[in-house]
Image 1 (cartoon, rainbow, N blue to C red):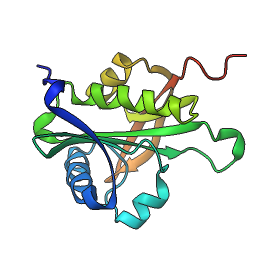
Image 2: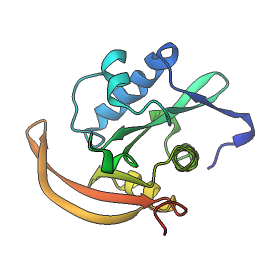
Image 3: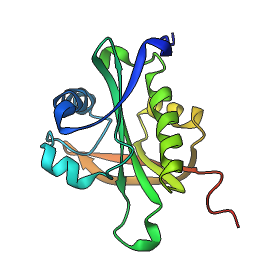
Length: 170
């Protein structure tokens, strides 16, 4: 069931709404299939680690439903147009199309900011995230077996990418 996008509002992630970002992130951590991280970030660290654009949240009736943001994949200038995607949806809002709205908005804003490739590393058992990325035009480009441990358990990672269509074509 898709929500009515007319009542939803896209807002930037700022220090003022970061506590809502952390709450949704905490729900993702609880699944044990969203990230290798175990700790909740502080604003200063999160702010430093993410690009200063494409910090997107979605609200309905003044309640944050989900968010997405980008981290650089490298500090080398040649990779300035490549970024890694984070997308998190509030537990009660999953399966309603919120992720698709966010990821499509991220793609649009990425292109406007000179990003030419988005990438995601997704735990192989996180099938809903893999399907979401596929619906938004990402393709699987790799598989990393036992790339790291989460709570003592080895995790495999699916590598997915999205190429911005109008950039990098000469």
